[in-house]
Image 1 (cartoon, rainbow, N blue to C red):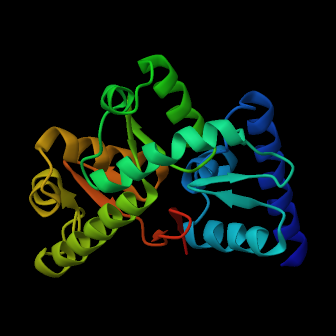
Image 2: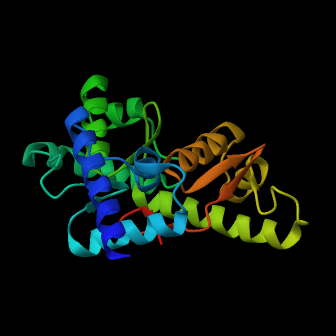
Length: 222
C-alpha cells in the first residue's frame, strides 16, 4: 500500500543519512549492504522494488556500486583525476588480474602511500572497487566476473539435484572459469558475498535471486 511504501522509503533515506554522517568520506553502502542496515529480513524482491523506485524518483543516486543521497558526493580534484586516469587504464587492461597498489606506484612514479590514497579515494568515489587490501578492480572487469558467476550458477542449477545448495558456485569452478588462482578466486567470491551479489552457503556461493550486475554502474539491482 502507498502509505507503507512511503514509510519504507523514509527508512531507507534515514539509513543513508546516518551512514553519510558516520562515514562522510565514503561514497555510500552497496545495495545489499544497505538492505542489511535497513532490514535484513525484508524480501529481496520488495527491497529491489523499493530501491528501484527511489532511484527513479531521484531520492537516491548510484555511484559505481554505492548508493547515496543526492546531497552527498566524494569528488576528485582535477589534478587527482588527471593522475588517476592512467591508473584506471592500467586496472582496465589488467582485467581479471589487475596490478597491485605497489605495482601502480612503481609504474607511474608515485610514492606507494600516495598511490594507495588515490586508489582509495577512487573507490570511495565509486570509480573502482577494492576487493582486498591494496587490490582494486575496474568496474568492467567486475562485470565480467559477475557474469561468469551467473553462468556458473545457471549451469550448477541445471546439473544439481534438489539439494539445499543447488546452484551454488564453488571456488574451484570459478577458478577454472576465470583463470585466476584459487586464493584470488576465493577473494573475488567473498567480495561478491560482501556486496550482496551472492551469499555463502557451506563451501559454495549462491547467486541472490533478485541480484543482477549492471555493467554501466557496476551495481547489483533488479
